[in-house]
Image: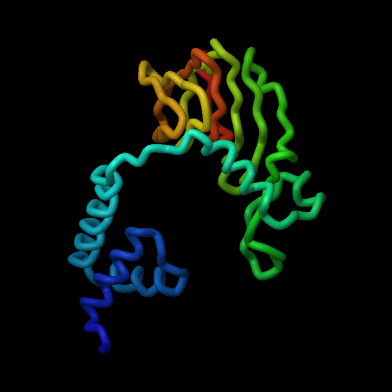
Length: 206
């Protein structure tokens, strides 16, 4: 059965809030919104509802062998040419791109000194256009990451160990998201391994 225009808008608005629309659908929705302030208000209501979903979901315990299975899965995926692994590519989905996927093998991660005592970094992916980096960060027991201000959203997932962020103790499976402009320092008691996505332009404050 063909949907009425209002039903079609409601469907597009929900899918946009869930970030699942393709480019043509986004253009269609944008045209509808330009023509109607009332529809803009309805779309905003959908976004608020979707944002609240995460806070109502029950907590799911994380398997203690998460890190092991994560690296094992990386090793099982089909091989990537050596020249791609050694580079720091810009994610590009243009027609000339050979593949929309980039794979960094666990055994190809090169650990380097971060420049702070007890902390080393393994780069996974660098997005030069967005000025973002996805990396692994290893903190030795007692290490402290200096206070810094976030230039963009920072996301941290604790793969193992403990991390204390502004008095909150986080353990394996915990997720920390910091908004642009916020500041924090962090410290670990027994050491930890973190998966991080952050901005190039963070400002060190200490």
